Image 1 (cartoon, rainbow, N blue to C red):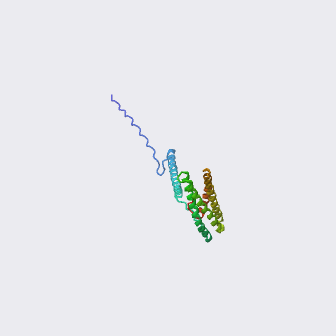
Image 2: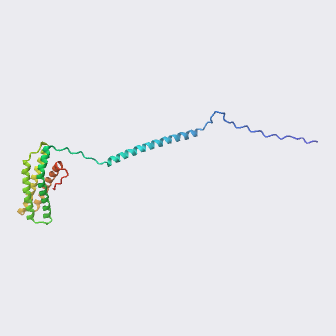
Image 3: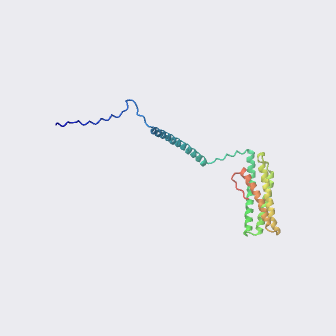
Length: 210
């Protein structure tokens, strides 16, 4: 008996994968959008930070330049003819007063350190009294302009303070203790402060001994 032949079934073909129709974009998932938004936001933040940093840096540079820039003092107003004449007249008196004050200061230090004896100190004090009394008389003879009246009165007071200090120190001649020299010191110091104040107004940068 003839063997019947049974044909094996052919495997079914797989259906083709659907493709996007022409002109229609493939839809992206939500993760891609978030990444794009994050990149744009980060870029904006970096740009703002960079611009802010440059602005702050420029402000710091301006502040540093302003701090390093020297401050220019306001120029002093020019003296009038009357003020100039008074300042020149007082300058002559001032030279003698400050020189005498310096000599007395040096002599007092030498006496306290046993560099000189009392007679040498008294000699210098006597000479200074002559200078201070003459200065008082010369200052009173001056006629200051109204703008310099305060300087005139101050300098006159300084000359009298120097006289008072010298007279106090000369009490040592009577055999008194050295306390008189100590008492004379602050009086002379006060006279020196007044001279420095007047000198700063009339003759800037002028050194006046205390």
